[in-house]
Length: 459
Image 1 (cartoon, helix red, strand yellow):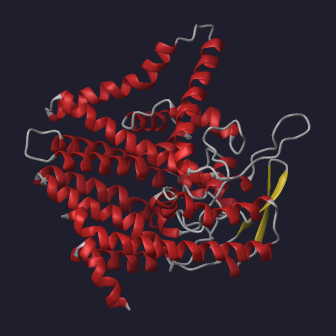
Image 2 (cartoon, rainbow, N blue to C red):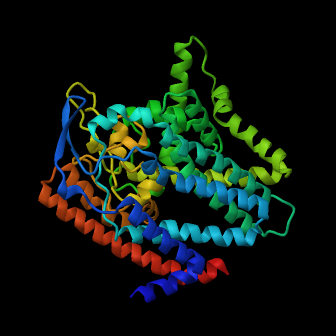
Image 3 (cartoon, rainbow, N blue to C red):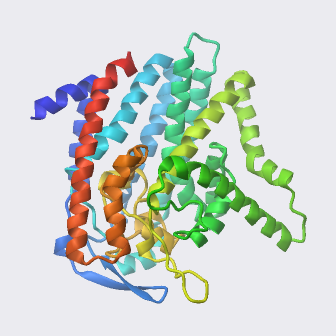
């Protein structure tokens, strides 16, 4: 069985990547102690905004440098890879091949691997949350490493794809899309984490990362719009049950821009200034246009080549961000109270995932309920709540699933129905197990399809 699995994987990922995947799987399993601690621990009642919720008390969070080390593996790895990429002048063909393998690994292999890995139900203790800020820097530095890696990688890709070489049009497009996956998948996640922090440096880096994705207006809309209106019909970033991603995408793009414009108008009104749509557009897209010019100058490439490359990677990154938004609150709604207001945001209004590996890569973004309850809480101190609905897999598998609406509805809608009707624990457990089995069958089917298609893609 193992050989039957490894041989086709080797065709797609390459021998060196299969060995690396095997090694890192064992490494993570040992270092992170991938096991479920849910059944062995007590439940703590936490009062949140006047309501009681239950956190699953697993092993206490490790706030030492040993606990912070896994957060550095991906950022430092990409920093090293970006430097090697620059110094060795990697060819376009080789870059496309290697990074295609990376995408297959992340969106096809990783979700299948997580089917075999126990969930992480560990939570920081109350005392750790109270004193966690004293040890925040050792975790926050990993976000700074990723920021450096992203800008260096963007420079390297621009130099390679936009040069006067024999790189085909298809490979230029592939490099731009792969850069968009990296900058959108990880970069905007880092920007999101930094954006919610009070330090001016963190906000500056967050705006820089969003500038690199030509999505700077999202910063205001997310904080002043989405966090206030989440899980309501007024929120353009909350998807509705039965709404496909392809219907959600144009609605959220236009709605988020409109929401950001309204926030800008309100801010100008409070300052006694007139709100100009031209000024808003300049603030939103001017820094990105300037950054594209800087990219052309630093890499010594023509702007007419750099600009389409930059815009395409931005489009890919934005699409990936909105795919994450699509799954984070799909089908969840806050009750409207008699006074016309909506109930407070609680852990029930965000989808969560306790899958360890994808949580590690995404800086625990998948503990989304606690983030909406306490937006400024550092990622290493986010908690799992018993009341939070759980996705059948991590974000990487769910993002891929979102591009196939019939399969997405088949897997997710029973979970939405069970959660919205407050199903009892036994029914919820049955529906959850069924959804995970359905996703497992679908994920294996997609992996098999990617193995069959690899020759045409890599040829």
